[in-house]
Image 1: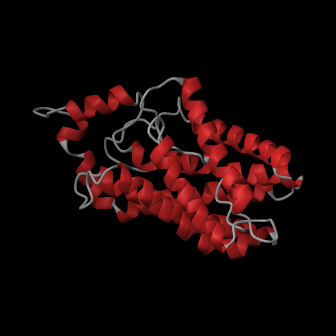
Image 2: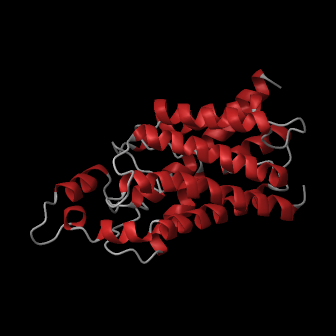
Length: 264
C-alpha cells in the first residue's frame, strides 16, 4: 500500500465511520429527529453498523485501521512504524469530515434543538434538561454528545480505565481474528467480527464514558464542535478531551503487548 492509498483510505473510511456513528447519536439526541429517544440499543448497533460499512469501504485501500489505537498496536506488533503518521493524519481528518457531514445532514434539527428553551434555558423555560446536562458533563454543551464522548461520573482514573479496558478488547479482537492474510488490515470476515465486538463493547462497557475506544473518533469531532457556528452550543469540554485520546492509546499498546506474549 502506498502512502497516498493509506491516507485516502483512512480518510474515507473514518469519515464514513463518524458520519454513520455520529449520525445515530444525532438521530437519538436531537429534538426534531424522528428517532428521538430511540435509546442506547440504537446507538450501539448504529456504531456497529458504522464500523462494518467503513471497514468494507476502506479495506482495499488502507487495510481499514480507522483508529489510531489499532494503528499503534499493529506497529508495536510488527515493528513497522513508517506509515503510522499517515494513518493517524487520515483518521483525524476523516473524523472531522464525518462530523461536519453529520452537521449538514441534521442542520435543521441542530438549529431547532439549540434554540429550544427547554434545552438551552431562557425566560419561561423548563430548564431541567439543561441543568441535567450541566450536572452530568460539566463544560459540555447540550449537543456535544453527538460529536464526542463524556463521562456519566467524572472520575479521571476510572474514566481512563474504562477506555483502556474497552480498547484492549477491541484491539485484541482485531489482532487475533480481524486481520487479513497479509496481516496489514481488516479482511472481509474481520469486518463483521469487529463490528459485532464494537456492539458488544458498547452494550457492556459503554455506559460509564460512552466508549470512545478511538482517539480520532473523539478528537476530530470535538474540534469540529468547537469550530461549527452552532447557536447556544456550549462548551466542548476540553478538560476531559485528553481521556478518550490517552486511554485508547494505552489500551492499544497493552493489547499489542498481550498479543506478542500470548499469541505471537
